[in-house]
Image (cartoon, rainbow, N blue to C red; front, side, top):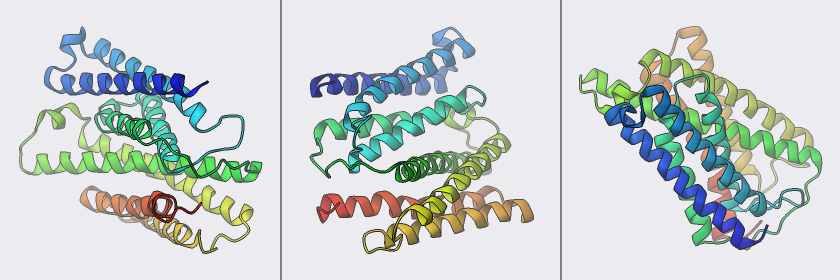
Length: 276
């Protein structure tokens, strides 16, 4: 696949993401009535989301050098994470009413693709990782993706709670599932993300020579801090029934630590210090 073809897939994916987001926004005003009803409109929106995800996957295949050495530069890694977030959302939407999260996730994925088209990456050079390291990378990215969706869910839950407390329900509030359903889905996402983050940390300790080396120490410390925050949150949920604003604050705090640990450090090392 040449660069022009990859760019064409990226542009088509951006348009599909924007289209899917526009349909979700429209549904908040008309409940999919303009698309033939709630069920049919939702299916059309999700189908467009799947088209965008497939196109995004085809564009990412070249950028990541699928089948060869992995090029996990800052924007490439960010694109892969947003793609996984989209796929997790779309698969979850098959069983749960979480498609409205696409109003945040789809524009995020489109924005990352726009950045990739605007600022093509030249480095760092691709690395031919051994299979244990590949497993560690994949598990880490999946953990980040699940907890990213949990953070988005927490933000929407916060908006929903704010509207209910002030008895001011916007179209967004009315289009979301009930508060109890949103909260249950939040803890399901956190549980899955915490399990994957645990596996990521364990595989890092097993497969990396020095997890606290100079270029990894900050990432390791912040990832462990995020694990502790999410573990305490799940403990508080099980033992003390934590929910609402307490759960939201802990979720966003844990995700902030995780985001700084991976993308914050990666951005500083690659884009500012120009180090791999």
